[in-house]
Length: 298
Image (spheres, rainbow, N blue to C red):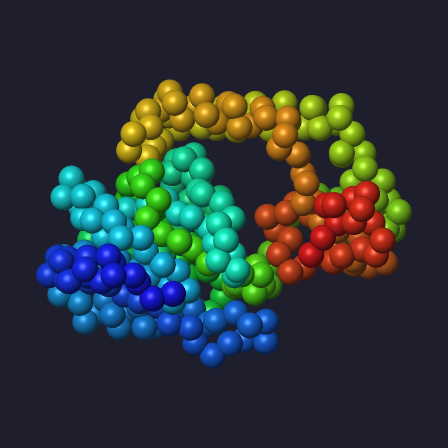
């Protein structure tokens, strides 16, 4: 998507204060996912003389205030900034608006999940180079890799509630089609019938309540420890107390199912049970069970 007129005006207004690195799709892989612009980003960083850098992937779109929001945060002393986003499907319809709690950040959270997409991020000049630049390794997610190395080096994200980016959601994106090289095995089951039975048992109301209570206890303790240490980053406009209250409401919400994407991988004549975060393209769709066991999916 090309930037609209408002973004073009901002490009001109901020051109002396910030550089825009725009990603381009490389040759498509067999799944239709573009190769990541890792090398070109390093080339752009080396060529830039601007005090701040912003990224725009080829299939995303900045809203007119994106650069202004980044500049506001840099002027306030931020070094690494992530804005909120709006997810758009391939038909141009809005799918979601990033939840305010998505703006909670800590190095441990960065380790657990690939926060944030490059089009949402801006940083002062020299940050990537200080930790070796964008990786050119074609294994894994290059943005997650860089943010992790920056966190290890002591950098901290500043997050904001301003939704300034439209993100294109595609089933063929690298996030959805990458082969996962590592996984966490929860156990083994002998056949498809056992997989279906486990999924049905997990869906039982009493089991869901037990899982939710355990999940809530662990998550809230995790976040409270970070908050008590004064290390929890909250988006501007959200207090730590508001963040913890919002988290408590989220993790105890009965409308959010537990282990809804548990996956089963055929191996050795049986099935390995794995959690959704380690499933990726390893999971398989078992025949004729989706209606009663929605967790059995690719």
